[in-house]
Amino acid sequence: MTSPHHTRRSTVRAALAAAGIDALLVTDLVNVRYLTGFTGSNAALLLVTADDEEPGRAHGHVDKATDEADARTRFCTDGRYTVQAQDQVPDLPRLIARPSDVALLRGAPAGSVGFEARSLPVAAYDVLQAVARERRRPVSLRTTLDVVEGVRLVKDATEIDALARACAVADRALAELIAADGIRPGRTEREVGLDLDRRMRELGAADPAFETIVAAGANSAIPHHRPTAAVLAPGDLVKLDFGAIVDGYHSDMTRTVVLGEPAAWQREIYDLVHAAQAAGRAACAPGATGDAVDAAARDLIAAAGYGPEFAHGLGHGVGLQIHEAPSLARGSASIMAPDMCVTVEPGVYLPGRGGVRIEDSGVIRPDGYHVLTTTSKDLRVL
Ligand code: ZN
Ligand code: ZN
Image 1 (cartoon, rainbow, N blue to C red):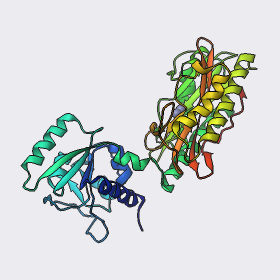
Image 2: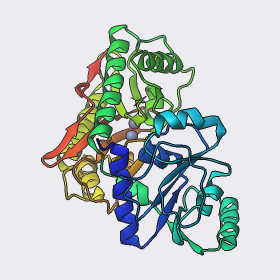
Image 3: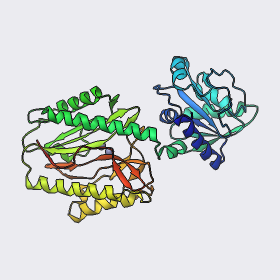
Image 4: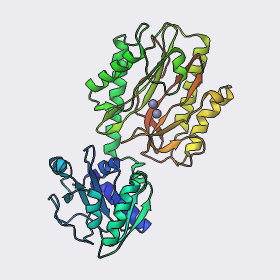
């Protein structure tokens, strides 16, 4: 059976062939995880060679050879991860060596070897250049940008399933928090945030997807407020932006609730953001640009006179990272495509008074945007 990781490597190989690159040195740990399944927290690298088809080769062994021009896709880590690599990367030759980048470059096929310019430090690049010059059969290092990230844009079924489970954990944690009267006057933002994080962990999250935002009263007008000792009070809007990590995938959702009957201005901006979020979801279909999806929500908010009060992009990709491509924002040329996973999260923030944001994570299908976040978006009065 072909593993999703094998399929992803094949897709990267096609991208390398199209770019005229003979091998890619993958140094970004998230990309290494994506292509191999290895979850170690550091010191793992991968060399993907363009002409390696993988089947038919002797795999699943510790690989000592570093012959030049062997043209094999190889995984490399150091001795601390020997057992973990054996468990998680059984389908590739594994090299145990450090520094891993030098070892992999020594064994790379002759020709052009791409490196990931966003993640390779300049100091490491200088060392690799020296190694490239020492080799009998020459290699030239080639700058690459977003080769693997480009493949990660469109999610496979394994990824969408993990993201859906991450969303379900966050949905359930919020439902339990509300059912336990966890969002009430007298509690601090910090207490509410810790309570929500604990519930997500108990429901199976490896971690919160990012530092949970709980913003009450005037703080809710700060888009990325960090929870403080501020005490929730009757009449406050309380904005909660949070997510769970499940199998490496990050969910992201925001709900804004109100403590007691909403004031007219609170109801007004809530209804506006609610309508803008629906417009954004409706526009988020294959073929649309990130700019157009953003505009669908933004135009509605601007028409109501709150354009300047929506001062961030409409959404972003989610996956192995909490913020990844594509971007749904003004000027974004990203084209939406089936199986991309993105957030839709407009907001209106009135400084000194309060703000509302509503955010779902979802997946783009041929017929449009499908939410993975299932919590109701009706205004919740607590
Ligand atoms: Zn969020
Ligand atoms: Zn977000």
